[in-house]
Length: 331
Length: 293
Image (cartoon, rainbow over all chains, first blue to last red; front, side, top):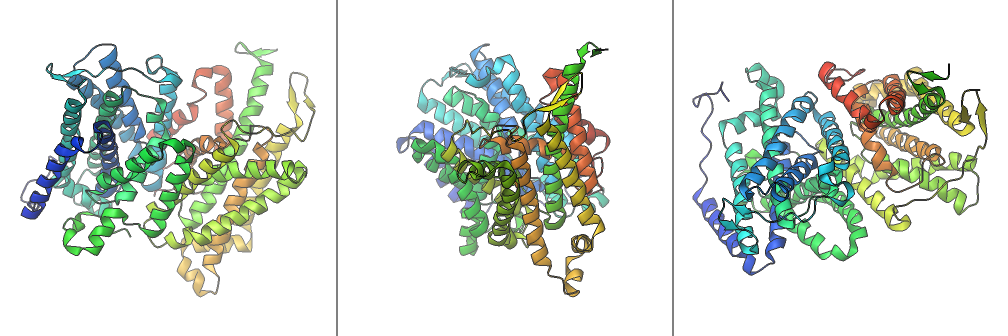
């Protein structure tokens, strides 16, 4: 970001007043939600939404399709769970530790992965995720097939007692909300605009003097950290981190949520998480059908509703498509 | 002279053979991926599931129809080719015009669907498949089952045959031309959409064929495909999908390296291919045989 002065790039557009009102309504609804729905279910949706949003951010604003975000989500879950359970760390510190490990992992894998583009990038991230999966299977502190169990809910900042489900819900809402706010800020910052320029025309961005790979790497690390934040909150919520969290199925699920909600839209991951999370909740008794249904949803959405639910909504109601120019025209 | 670097020669020979067998599958699979990618610009995520399906078709041919392995070897690629044909017609064809991401997501979805369906029908444990060739070759220091030699030999023949077909025949030259400039080739009256369809069908048939070959060696199980495909993706990243012979060589080479790792550093055998991938990314980011993207 060092090479950009504010004069070369137009200031990010102000959020329109109507959108602000909708935002307030949304926040109000989220605060009131635990009185309507089971709080832990909402926490699950929030974590899924942030994981998907981290993947979506990379696709929409950096043009990078990651097939390996489970490694950030899962490793953060393991580390947060470990420091909270065995070392008795404060909740906030445990989350920071988890996000830290996800960011470091993002830095190391990112440096290598962004050396390839397009489809190769996806395959490289998938391969790295598989290495992390192998490590999770073999390292002692992850407890292999059993997973890290019975992680206690720690105190946050020494005073918030999160054993109380409602308190935990609000802590989680704050953390996940911070993640979404960060994505929003990044997308509407000069940095976000450069990312978009790179996505649309990498050669031109390069010729304008931007250190393309540095921008991509920063975006990748940010995305990894956000996926890590989702994983950290998830392990504290359900006191469990397992191999499933680092497996490729989790990366696939994140992509599924993105595409159901609509790739390249800000709200897509949230809507997708609500739909897919609820679907899984009601299909809990049919575990063996989950893969089939996920596959079917993929096929149906790709063939018939490529824009996803939010994209379709914006398509039907043009006035709702204020952020249209931020999304890549892919369909 | 019965050990090298403290490793018994018997174990070494055994692992080299196993390595070459794994390499044969890496080669066949990455060859199929490379052909499909070269023509359709789609990375076929379903490749692993199609390989698994091939193994199940072979198992079904023997179990339900009572036919031998040799019939399965003949029937399966045809069945899988038809499956590929249908999949291209029904789905992929409609996605060429949109962002390639969607084709990737579609093939991933179909892979989930297939794996889920087979898991529902057959469970996780899988089915055994009888070895069609008993006995083996006694080379003094070690004993190599015939079937393993057969797999290696057939894989080499199929890979070279495919290379010859694409690089040295007239139809192959049409394929390569359509890859460079589909519109121009169409103006010569060549039906490019049909060529794309047949290419995909051929790639899928190749995956199915690998599945039949694998059935007697590995357990026929619903997750055999997803386990293999991730490693094959790493192989493809290392070799690059630009060259057919390149993918074949990379496949066999990596299988061999993996086999040797099992002897000399067994702890790393599971990840050695990924380590090679990292080294390749550092020193030759475009892959060993890849061109700049």
